[in-house]
Amino acid sequence: MIKAIFFDYDGVLTRDKTGSLTTNRFLSECTGIPYEAVREAFRPHNAALNEGTKNYSEIWPDVCASLRRALPRELLLAAFESTPVNEEMFALARELKERCSVGIITDNKKDRIELLRQHQRLDDLFAPIVVSAEIHCTKTTAAIFEYALGCLEIRPEDSLFIDNSERNLLVPAALGMKTICFDDEKNDVPDLASRIRSHT
Image 1 (cartoon, rainbow, N blue to C red):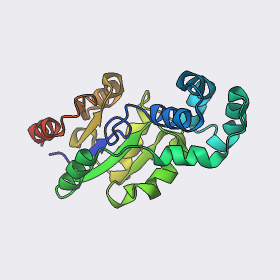
Image 2 (image 1 turned 30 degrees about the horizontal axis):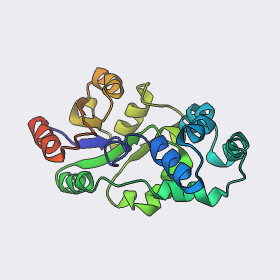
Image 3 (image 1 turned 180 degrees about the vertical axis):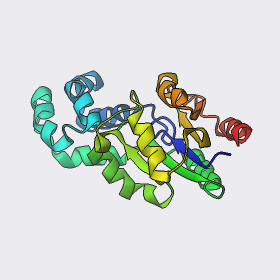
Image 4 (image 1 turned 60 degrees about the vertical axis):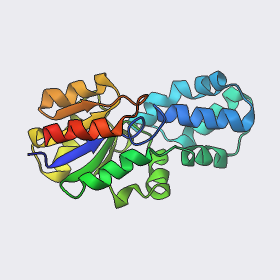
């Protein structure tokens, strides 16, 4: 019996494949700076941001120096808020919550998810919300999944994890969690719902 279903965030609960794509695109469009230049400015900092050893406030001066523009930090916050919600997936999560716990496990930046928890009211629907930057480990390790399972005091085999990347399913599957890879480009939520029912 499935007691909890965990969703990845970007690419599953959102319509963009990654959070970096969302942020970089917004900043590029607002400033006229080429997308590739914005991506390269953030690239050296992505691992530290996801692992929680740095936050955006700390790396923002370096990003601006790389772009040779003194951009206001409010622009970054607006970039976070531009994250496109996958409304169909949220509706599915609300439906599933009537039968089991629904949570989030995501490799993500602490300050970004803190803002989105309020902006998208994530805590109204998902618990726990497990963020790599907050517990200092990513989906390449078992620790982040064990932490999420521990929050609900359930066994791996009583849970299901949904991600839009096959490689992110290897570790939870090895733990004994059931897994589903979601094709974010097709965004076929009814098909996903059917696949979830086959597990539950």
